[in-house]
Image (cartoon, rainbow, N blue to C red; front, side):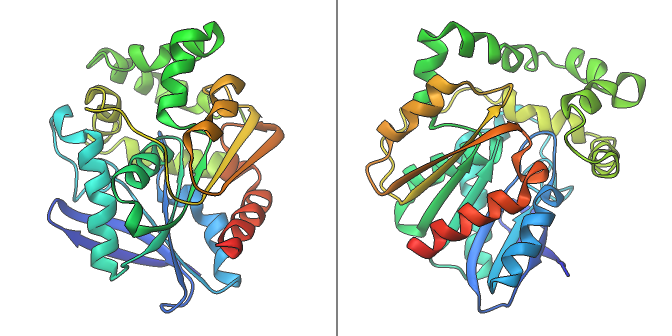
Length: 277
């Protein structure tokens, strides 16, 4: 059974779901676009059975209590700062960090900026940012896959397209890999005033300043072969950007929505990763 938390930070109050004993191993799980913390619900239940204390927040823009209007307030340093502030409020000196999609990008940058705070890193779908940047420049396939990011930076136009016909464009993103009930919950949340713009502001905040380096935290990277956003070039190059213990897991015939499509398989490799470190 999940707990519902309100986590106060200097930026505002984050909503979160949590499961597992208070004294269990602390694991923070970060969702991506256009989802919310409930994307991790199935994984949370499985972690709880293993005695893990798992917390999944609705991130900046997704939590009504932390929804600034300006895109500039969604820069990567702000998002990383949120992770650290949430961990501080939870009383977690060191913790395991898991992220999917945009949440994985934030997790990579958190590991780069605050390696001392992380026991392990797990990134799902999104490769190391430097590997992705290189693939975007040199691999035509990845360049084509990433074009949506540029399109979504257009203010107002993107909101109109995504919300038209009861958010049909967002429904189609999930390609029948996520249950209709879960998708309906995401759309209900994105229908709140300012919520869709806040979620898109992650794309509009601009590229991070400075180059992200090699990660010196034990890392698990999970990539799925049917991911429409991230191709194999960046996925396979990611190991060259981790200087600590590294594990790569490839899920065959699984879409981008890994944590909702195959929560059992994902939780199994995550628990093995945690157990090894």
